[in-house]
Structures are given as C-alpha cells and as structure tokens.
Image (cartoon, rainbow, N blue to C red):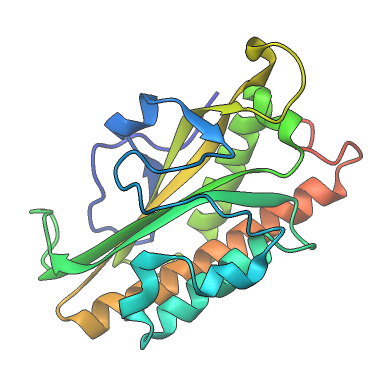
Length: 226
C-alpha cells in the first residue's frame, strides 16, 4: 500500500513537501527501453549505463541552464544513479526552467519543475507491485527526513505503468511499473529558483543513495522484506 501523503498540489509548510502526485499522463503505458518521445520526436532514449558520457551532452532541457550549480548536481545524480554503485537506474528525465509561479498557495514569483523516472536495475523487480510500492515509500520517507527545514521545494511521487520489452516471456510477464519523481522549486528571481532546485536535487541524491544502500543490503538484491 502506498503511504505517501496524497494532496492535490504542494503548499508551503515547515518541511520539504513530499506527496503522492496525480499526473494524468501517468496512466499512459510507457516502454523500457523507449525509442522516440511522442511529445517531441527529437528526444531519444539513451542508455546512460552503457554510455554515461551522454549524460552531459544529450539532455536538451539542461543545456541553457549550465551556468547554475543545480545543473551540475543533476548531472552528478544521473551519473551516480546509472553508475556501478547504484541498485537503480533512470529511464527518463525532464526539466522546465524558471517561469511564472502557477500556485496561488505560494508567495514566490517564479517556479521551475522537472521529473526523474527511476526503476530497479534488476528489471524483474519492476514487475512486482510490492517491490514498486516499497521503492516509492522508501524514497518518499527518505526525502521527507533528509532536509526538514527546507520550505521552497516539493517532490511528487507517481507510479506509472511500463512494459519491459527486454524481459523474456509473453507480454503479461513484461508488464510492470516505475517510479516518477516530479519536483518543483520556487523563488523570487531566477537565481533563487535555481538555488532551491540545487537543494532539492542534493536531497534527492541523498535519499536515493539511502534507498539503493537498503536494496544492496537485502539478501535478494531487491527491496527488503516489509
């Protein structure tokens, strides 16, 4: 059972908001590995585990924001996530730079947002709802605890359906899920927005490292027993 608090949108509070995010696109089945993006045919799937050097050259959304430390933090998160130490990997990511704030509940003038799709490196684990719920709850709880004083950022957790086309067997054995982590940061100006984004990405890195360590410590190499 998913234990992430369920709210419609992030609101300012006394800690970094982590919540169950309702995304209408989350019901659309995805494929791993995918080929071309339906929203933009120029976007391609890259295997960052096999070719980590592409992390810094192929993510179009980050190119114009390279002057800010948050971009380097995002690159390093992806490099670790897809590197040899991690029990997880990424499937997709996106970033939208500083724009007008769309939340009436927050007083800051600007916001930015993005997403990161993560899954177990052991692909079979992603076909188990119990394993995916453990990953979601573990990531949410770790993120909530890592930086409790931070107010101007939020992370939303969404479980999305995926077909793992490289798994053997009939299509029903290839059906699984992955975790989409959507994130937001707010600020009065572009620099403040990107500074708060950097803090969120640092928090994500710490939390996902904790989750990965838990997986490595389990005897099965997947999620620990509940």
